[in-house]
Image 1: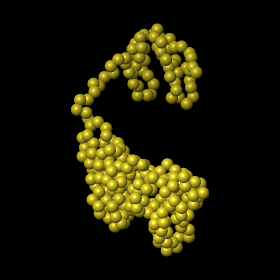
Image 2: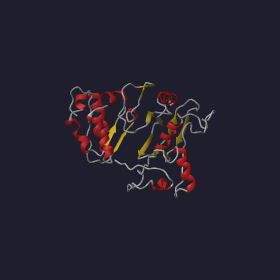
Image 3: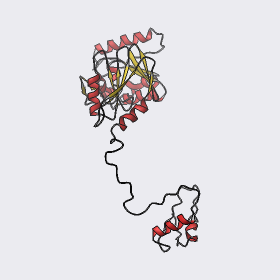
Amino acid sequence: ATPGTDDQEALQDGVEVAESWKQREIASVEVLHTRDRDRANDPDFCAPLRQATAVWFTGGRQSQIAAAYHGTRFEDEVRQVLVRGGVVGGTSAGAACLSRVMIVRGQVWETPGLGMIPGVIVDQHFLARDRRDRLLGALQQHPRLVGLGIDEGTALVVKGRELKCLGESTVHLCLGACATLEPCERVLQAGEVADLTMFRREALARLQPPFPPEQPGVPMVPSGSLVIVGGGGLTEQITQRFIELAGGVEAPIVILPTANPKIDLNEGKFLERAGAKIGRAHV
């Protein structure tokens, strides 16, 4: 990156992180940095991302990452790395920015994060800084989301719907409180896996009214009649009862053969044989 409106300290930090990756004999490592949203939308600035197979976000302040990159070409190009089958990662603030809803200084931040993983809130330093309460507080505001509390020295690897804990400590999968349920969480130890889709469904299910309800609805059709046939053709008794409920053989009956792959305009012949009068019309 070329210094300009960008601060030298952040650039130097990026260079040091890049050197740590180069020491692992990675062929190509490039540093990108800006706080200018115009640059973040510049195709030339974003060009290295179009060739990248991996993107790494360093730590610091997730609010600055969101301010610079949310809703820009840069964000789109990072997402395309994932679409191509690459990997996006980050530590500390670089992890927090990967969810759309972010926590900054204990509060849900007004500027969204990059949203690389849907349906979650990421929080970091989880056990080391005792952040369970702040994550549950954010889930109270966004109960449809799943909280991912990731401790220091630990990573959550996400591939498809699989979540896998990797590292020295644990990952906590949290669901917020709702009207009838207390918060709950599952702890992943190193090497353990979980299903993100299952947890997202559970978060939504917890918002539904209790089942069974205290006062179930009256099991009745309030007006008209339903005749629900299990297939296999109609008996004479069922046919006559349907015509009777329709108002008799002079009633205007509509036939809907839409489910049939090949529309058959003679579908209502069985009713005609029973005495009903069926018109012929179709679109």
